[in-house]
Length: 86
Image 1 (cartoon, rainbow, N blue to C red):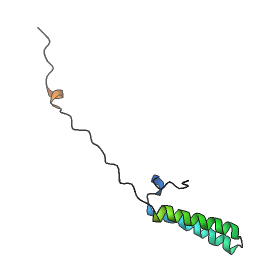
Image 2: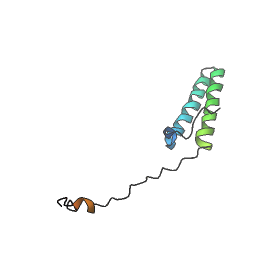
Image 3: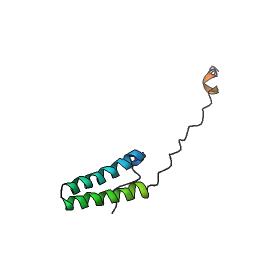
Image 4: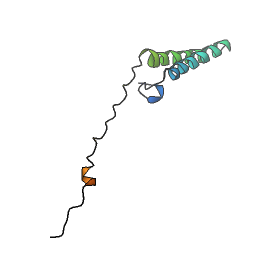
């Protein structure tokens, strides 16, 4: 089961991934200082999992190549219309 999808575009910037991990570990520190070991372990485990997924195993997707349409020949537009008078 995958809780974090590292291929999602929101995780592409490095600062976003670092911020998520820092918030998780920061909250674990807050819970530790508040004498709440269960919540400290829970948020610390979430921080470790997010660090594993977003920092250690992150493989950025290469940017998609833009396919440009071939230039159209404008000669047909400049040519006079054919004479249909016969």
